[in-house]
Length: 146
Image 1 (cartoon, rainbow, N blue to C red):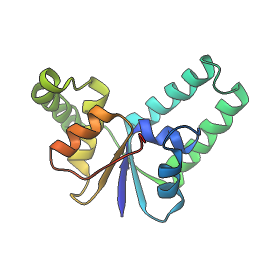
Image 2 (tube, one colour):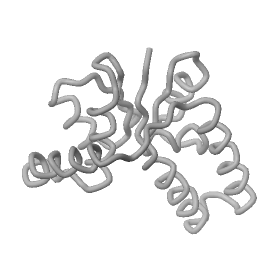
Image 3 (cartoon, helix red, strand yellow):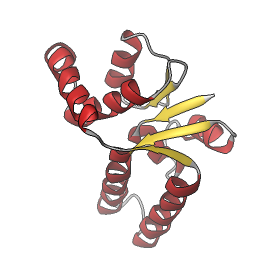
Image 4 (cartoon, rainbow, N blue to C red):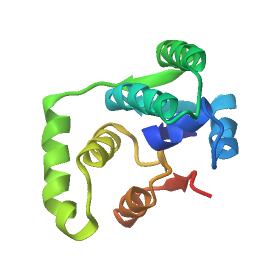
């Protein structure tokens, strides 16, 4: 199987929280895991936020970021930014921002998934609104929000 993992679920691989067991089963399998280049940025921001909010220690921040970097290099397929991704994200905002409150970063995650992933790829996410929107658009989803 192939899984596109949004940052909200990706973080659960490295920091135990609600839904970690679901995402760890995927991570430990031989299934293909796809992430966006945006997730590299969001991941670091999220880990440092967890440090600022006293959820983790600074040495944990460094260890987690190193492990994540290794996974980006050896475990994950990384989808890179391109002009068509920006155009698709903008198009998604025009279509869904008013009615479904689609946010900027979520529009990019959906654009990466919609533009690069095959139809059988499963969109994995903890954001309930984004998961419902992607599913409403006819894609397979897996929520790690239990």
